[in-house]
Length: 235
Ligand SMILES: Cc1ncc(COP(=O)(O)O)c(C=O)c1O
Image (tube, rainbow, N blue to C red; front, side, top):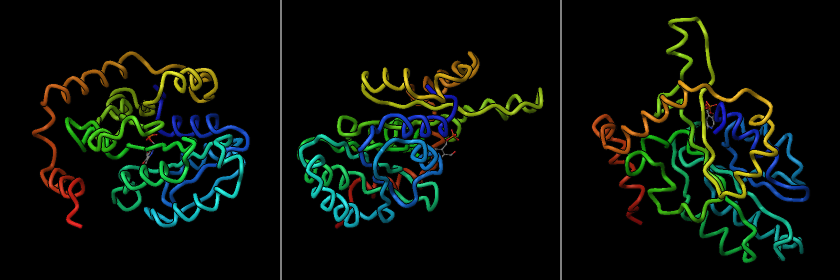
């Protein structure tokens, strides 16, 4: 758990990719990922055209000329958003997962999905797009923020009372090993005061409402419809 989605992305991208690793990022990726990449030791940070599986394939294929990438001695991280904040369009996530698996045969391709805009609203009980596509096991890490659909922006509530503005909170969903690594090396997590108990309690309440189906009735039907079409494309 981080104090904000910004902290989570910054902390993750600054510390997880190691020296010599490569980060490929969608052209429309959020500023917080750029911030993390600026601090990262990764050897190369390469932009691919927004939502273009073709452009990503071109870059991945070129990377194979690097023997260390080919042999799996160098990791390739791919940063995408499931629903983009810039244009509100959905990522071709399944195609990206298939592509990375097909090209990086040593299993050194790692996809990171920012679900800031899908968490709480897309998929079964608002669990996000990765979950609704059944891709949990194929995604290296997911960012779920709590300040948007989840509404746990303690700041607004407190601002009426005390004139304070607090940051939002967020979670990175990942393997236990990555979690341990983040706890030890992600600076925006270690070198700041932990979130308050009311923040945690608010998040817990919203998740209880999502799990028991209460929030289903307030989900806009257009979103459910658009998403169903996305899951079952006609072509
Ligand atoms: C795609 C995306 N990722 C991350 C963030 C940062 O999340 P937070 O507002 O919790 O800092 C935002 C916006 O705020 C966003 O739009």
